[in-house]
Length: 279
Image: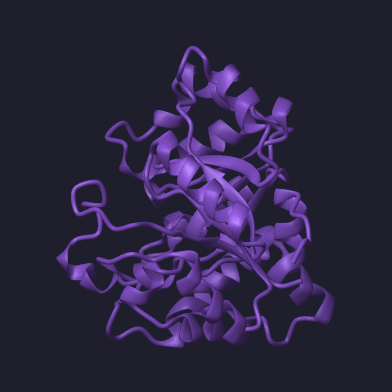
C-alpha cells in the first residue's frame, strides 16, 4: 500500500490562515478530501495521513470528521495543548478515535527557539507513549540542536521530523543542517519525512538536482527503514504540481530495491502511525 504520509485539508480563512500570504495566492482557497482523492488516484497513491495546520481542537474535529467519511484518509495528526493541566484527560479522549494517530505543535513559529524543552511541554510529550500516540517535529534548522536534546529525553517515544527540518535549499546551505540532522538521526526512535522540500527551494527556478545533496544526507543518516514519503499537498503547489514533486522523490530512489521503495513509499508510514488498510 502506497501512503502519502503528510498532507493537509482546510477551509480557507484569511485571518486564521494568515501564514498563507499573497505570495502563496494559489493556495488561498479551500482544499478538501474530494480535491485530493483524484490526485492520489492519478499518482497511484492508496492513502494518506492528514496533518493539522491550525492549532486548535476544532481542527481535530474537522480532520477526524473528514477521516470518518473517507477511507483513503488513513490517519490524522492533530493538535492538543501539551502544556495544559488536563493534558492526560485530553489524550484519553482522543484515544477513542481510531484514526487519531498523533500530534504536532508548530514549533517553527515559536519565538522561543527551544520551546520544546519547556518542562510543561516535555511533561505533555512524556504522556504520549502511554496512549500510543506519535509526535511530528515541525522545526527550522536552527532548532535541530534543541530537538536532539528533546528526543534524547524520550527514547521510547516515536518521533518523525517533518520536511527534513526545512534546510536552506534556495541558499544552498547544507553544512550546519547536515551535522545537526545526522546527530538527531542517531536516535533510532526518530523517523524523517521526505516532504516539503519544494517550498524551501526557489519556487520558480528549482531543478531536480537542487534536492540531491539533501536527500543524500537524510538517506545516509536515517536509512530506508526510517524515511517516509510525504507530499505536503496543497502547500507544495506554490512551487510544483503533485506530479512533479512526486517525480523528484521517485527519481532519487529509483535505483533502490523494490523492498526499500516499498518501505519509503508506504510501509514505514504504516508502521510508524499504526495505519489500518480499510480501503
